[in-house]
Length: 103
Image (cartoon, rainbow, N blue to C red; front, side, top):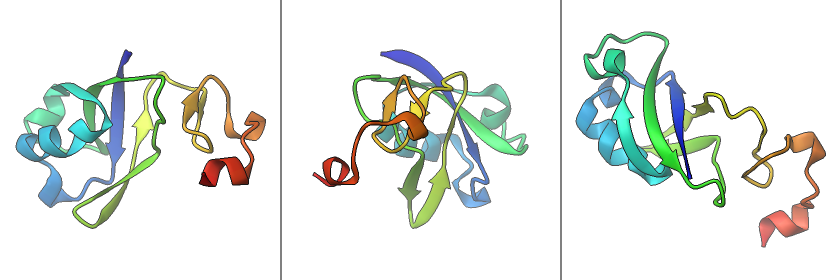
């Protein structure tokens, strides 16, 4: 497991609150903290949360929250493959075939 900061660009204004962030984003892993500027609602280009991520599980690039498809950006984790959901290589080097991915 690793602590990772996740950027949430374009978060709809109605979802930009601490209670919602703690509840909804805990699906990604154990919530550790919300960025101070996010917490005081100093809305910038993105919200930031820190989550303890299990690197043995699939990482996701998007999540559906209350009917909104929200894109996620993992800070500092540059070798994420969103084809297989694993850390350690980029999608173009992934050995998982489409058939394996669908199973």
